[in-house]
Length: 165
View 1 (cartoon, helix red, strand yellow):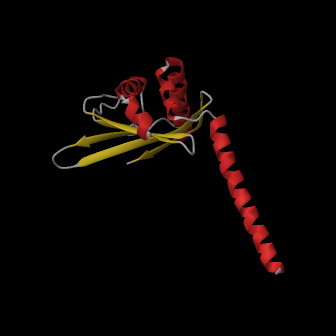
View 2 (cartoon, rainbow, N blue to C red):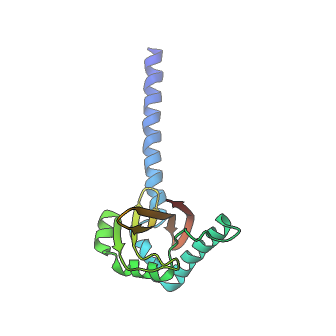
View 3 (cartoon, rainbow, N blue to C red):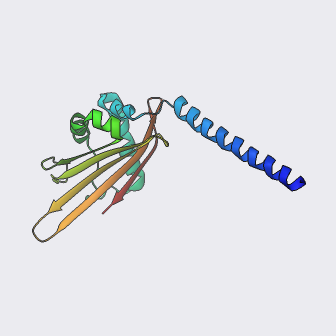
């Protein structure tokens, strides 16, 4: 009988803890003003420059002796173009959007790109991927740069950058 009572108490405590944990997560996200619309703050030139400054600052840390020529990073012009091309209704409904460009040139002369943005509501985070690719009859080469970040209370935080390819 003693073990049944202890077991019942432990079970009810776990249930209370789980409810508190879920309530805290909801409260935390609500307090953060977390939603996919925040991505469109990048349409503002000052906010966009802060984002691009974070890109440049991280590149300077990752490549203290100078950026590798094969790496591909977002430019202001590319970001403006992508922001104009996003179907906002689709993005706000599905939390993701992708667009392919066949004639968008960067400093390396590469013209074919794929840009995608994903929003993860539980983490209040974005994953922005810029992929460049070269296709010939003989081969296909793709390089991607992945930016992950959060926009919380109109501030860019948890910024990270990775390269693949």
